[in-house]
Image (cartoon, rainbow, N blue to C red; front, side):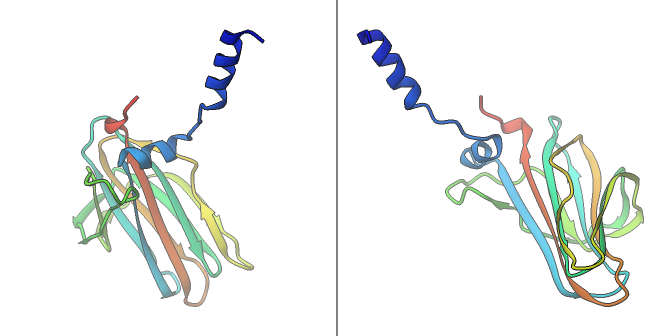
Length: 171
């Protein structure tokens, strides 16, 4: 091999590929929050109201888990009378001082849930965990993420919301 060929080969061997989510974490632009209830009553819900002011949108993933039957849904154009309690949006890069550009609250009083974007079922036999979507990009607006216990008894359940801000992407 020539010296140039060896140099190029060495360069390619030192190249490291990072997936998009991992890159956003390093940039300090990836956030997460979650709600959990160890005894979510029959027909009760975990609800997150998501208010997106960012013109470039946010890239989201929602995960739900339950001890038995449940549904996980995402609505847009949600209307509410009370936003609920603010939840901490944790930056997944604990060295970053960046804060969430969106507002997320729990337990909102919903007037109309809005337009259903997607609905998924967590299995009736053994329960489980469900990554509702690979990823959605939310435009500016108001959204509702909801996990509803559809089992006839109380059960443990959790709803997790992960996102990164598309406006902060560093290329």
